Length: 238
Ligand SMILES: Nc1ncnc2c1ncn2[C@@H]1O[C@H](COP(=O)(O)OP(=O)(O)OP(=O)(O)O)[C@@H](O)[C@H]1O
Ligand SMILES: [Mg+2]
Image 1 (cartoon, rainbow, N blue to C red):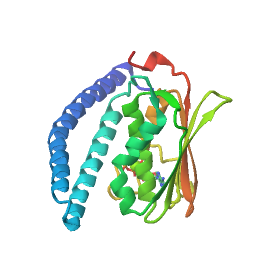
Image 2 (image 1 turned 135 degrees about the vertical axis):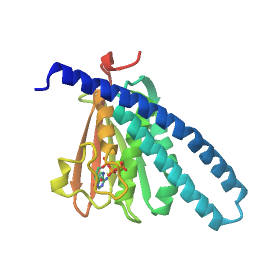
Image 3 (image 1 turned 120 degrees about the vertical axis):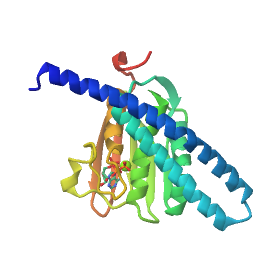
């Protein structure tokens, strides 16, 4: 058991780290936004030159990756405080798939969607997008080329909530790793931070939901998210 003084010091340090990270992330995001805007404009200018457009696409993908790492870092060092609103789940998922469309095409991945059109969920849209981008990105990275990624949403009548399944035909997760994938900094990738699934877990938790995984090595992986219809508001910004 840590002494109260030590515990207080750790909490203060984590809080000040959160402040520093917020500032650094903000300072990096400004020039990053300019790079994104200028490269998108350049891409339009080059619409007769597909080779050069492909080069620009690499830059755009890199920028999106950096942005995702920054978001994960921000969410890891600060406690997520959801600002709840009813949003169409189809819109949220489509926006995430749009952000990743370049990589999806590059990896020749077939996307199957089964999402009820007018289903609304109570959530913080920005946080929920972070969840889906992390899960979709993991699936894309697990499918080397030519696989299938399916996104299915259904209403859970019995427990009044929503179930979201993100399933890929990728490499699968070795059974000995399953217990560790949600741990901070656990990664099997050369360039991974290992924060993606920790953030997913934390965000789903503050929404009062749950996330679990089913995986078979060599066959693929499914992440199953359950979100309740009502959210306990003590963690939320009203
Ligand atoms: N869909 C998946 N298929 C196969 N393995 C997965 C999948 N999702 C996660 N994993 C495994 O879980 C590990 C942890 O994932 P997590 O998203 O937390 O970190 P990461 O993807 O390695 O790094 P980062 O998210 O920072 O890019 C991954 O390194 C990978 O081994
Ligand atoms: Mg990841």
